[in-house]
Length: 212
Image (cartoon, rainbow, N blue to C red; front, side, top):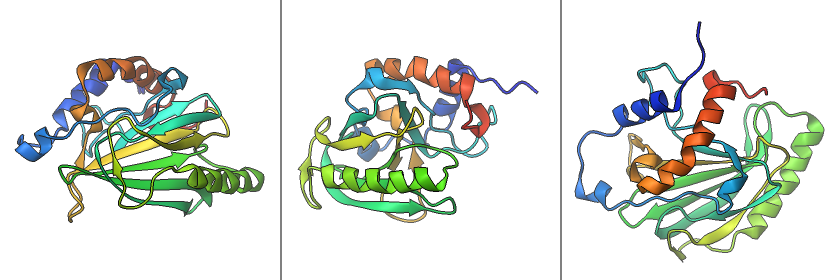
């Protein structure tokens, strides 16, 4: 079977997966990229809902894979900084930093700051624990602080080229969870930045493989 996916196919899925309706609340949402050094991004895994047209695995946000050992993390929206914590991811035991921002329209924007991706041995996981604590210590805002779109709020510290920011947007903090495609709320020029990295993901990582 052909396991390649083109940028145009991915874009078509994102359009088809957009939430129905166009409420004033959703119209108010404006999203930018969660990292400052966009030239450090070599791949981007796009948002994909369940049962999408071309069979891409479910992915509730957008990933920004970077090659630099440190990049600046930005607030992708204007709103209120809600929470940040180090998480030990199960079942593999890898470490990451999770943070949450409540946008002015009530949407929930969350990041996972991940030093790497995929399986890790004991030594790599131990380093991830240290890097995650350093990322937590580097957060420059506190719970309840006002943040503006594009404002620096921390750093991503990477172990390798699989370091990435995973960004998700939910319609609200209510249940059931309604995931939104972050790219639907970006300006056209910002979408252009993701074209080549999304193609790189399609060529190299399509169907969930995290092996070069």
